[in-house]
Length: 92
Image 1 (cartoon, rainbow, N blue to C red):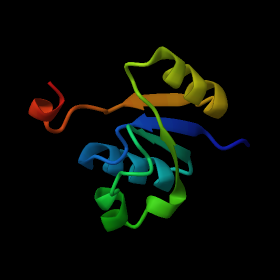
Image 2 (cartoon, helix red, strand yellow):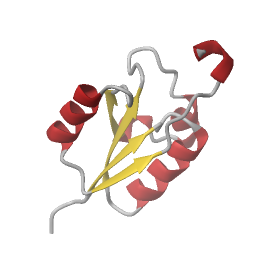
Image 3 (spheres, rainbow, N blue to C red):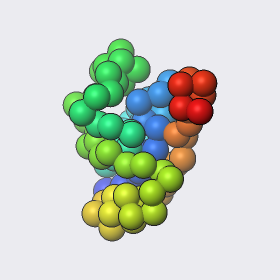
Image 4 (tube, one colour):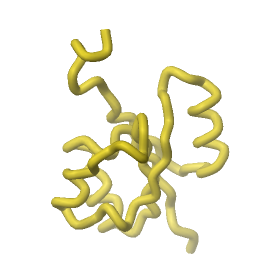
């Protein structure tokens, strides 16, 4: 049986990290997106001890090409959108 693939946008946040842990426990191959995979701290994932079990991708949800590129590369079975602005004032 082939392993299910899940894509979680906003995987570095609290909810994304807990969802990633749940999916990993269920045997999923977990991919996560963040705005900038090189700059994210991934502290929630590190605290849960699962950072090294996730494949990370940089993706801008407001850029169709960026989203399409990641979806084409991963071809996930399931997609979870938990991305959001954590400090809205900084981005206005």
